Length: 394
Image 1 (cartoon, rainbow, N blue to C red):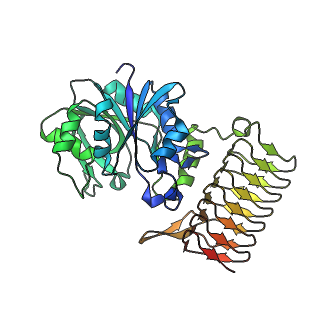
Image 2 (image 1 turned 120 degrees about the horizontal axis):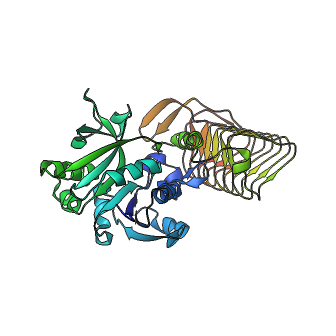
Image 3 (image 1 turned 45 degrees about the horizontal axis):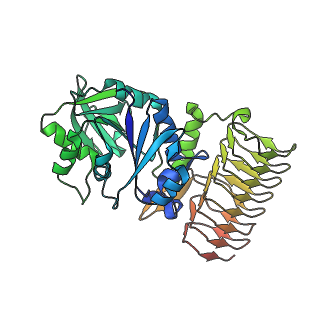
């Protein structure tokens, strides 16, 4: 495909990442210190994409305000998915903007550009679709694809049998047949999915190709995944965690502070005397780390303050969080409740959503989740899930 155009599906909320998605959509959550969707755009451009249509929905105004009409001189066209009724429904929202072949990717999963390039190179217009595949063992959590001689024969959501599946990387090249196929497919639970559309193509004897590739594929499904995704970006070299490469020139680091690679320290951060930052620490813009504080294996979002002598381990914060002097977040593993499920022994010290205020001297039991604008009085022990706006007294 020459000068390919892409459709990025970025309309979802990311409900399993609440409370971080209470005020912004999942594609704007940070991977290291950069929004997930920005990483998606970067990888598309590396693969040679020259036009991008973005399907927005939940939090669409924030997405459009953040990126504007272009990204690195590539034009962005926005279309709105008024209701979030599945990935196929999202693609239908962009139908009027698509001429010819379309590359389709998810806006909340980071896929290395080599996988995208392989799909583009493998696709030709004699096929209705080409699907990017990976050799991975964890297909049961996402989607499995059966392939014979380069042709897809079946797509199975959450497969549990013993057949040899490839992992569906969520990277597709589609001809216009996909739109009618999505409409013709029987909705499940009121949603129209891309995979059901592809199954409809297969049942009509259309050609669907599968190309097996290699490269980084990461997704943040649950809060602790934001830590793993950020660290995977370090390991893959998509984020260079060396101090020289990833400490912004406007950051202020005291001469008696210690920075342990890999780290990312964004513009206008301030690190005080005796503080230790890293390894695997990601500090967003305008983060302050007080004297003698420790921040390790954490994603600390913009405008957050870590007080003097605080310890922050395996932690994810939203924006504008205040962690008081002497507070201890000792790190995971811990049991984390997400909705009605409890996930055991996850490496999450705590999640503090947007504008949480911690007054200092508090201790967090691993797995604690604190909702937006909660106020934690000094000397408390914080455990479990704290709802939005709650005042916690010691």
